[in-house]
Image 1 (cartoon, one colour):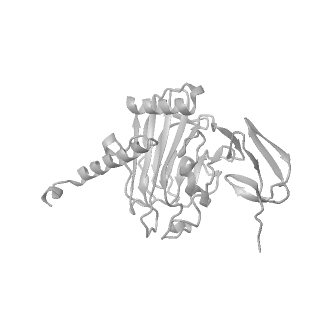
Image 2 (cartoon, helix red, strand yellow):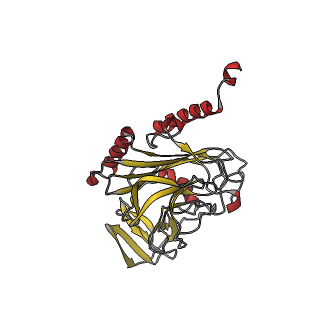
Image 3 (spheres, helix red, strand yellow):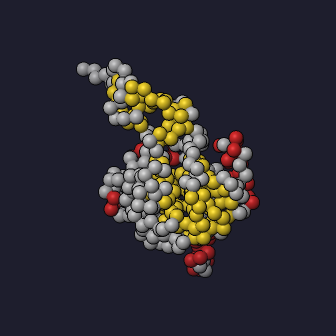
Length: 319
């Protein structure tokens, strides 16, 4: 007991941060985070946010320049203004709100977890980003010169009566003339806070989390598959770069590697899909999306699949 009593609250936070960093690095997915890595922490406050954070570079996002940002507790990095909304709205939002959201939902770090962030030019971190980008997008020959890393570590949800937590991370990076966002997903156990209609015992139901990008107009936006549906719970197993739990985007002039953007949604390269819930229009992603009038074959039914729809064989009922 005497030894424990000498551990100050700050030292305890550092020790916890070191443990969390080790866990993330074991996964090989997250970039190092926590107090031991020089991060700052967001306030412990429901619907809170960081102060406005000046950047040492100009970050280009959907063709516009930004010199500062906010890290918001509810799973967003926003430009121009902090965002306190806790129930995710369907994109596009045309009220001028501009943000990246790895997981927009009603995070409550009073219920557990921490939100960390830092701007970095650390050579080891930049080398890791460069190596990852070389694996994912070798044709870009990308060499990272700068990064901003925000991590939501083991965060709970508003109204929670469970121990369910989520861990996810956003990385903004640039080589001086290209600008990318990397989204990393660890364990995702809940989708919805109580005030968004979720079950306080399970963290499910209601209006589930949104993941993607909003530029503030009605044209430039993007939804990661599963957004605002129960499927977002499985985001840890999805990817556009064949690395489950990671999504990579070029954001100066928006591009989604590994597939096509169609109606602000993602289709994998080579994927066939139907674009509407009646399955009357069949489409193919082959560098770009082409569509033809074609319904479901006989003995199949039209059902949701990812961001779109597919024709699945009708199950036979045996008596």
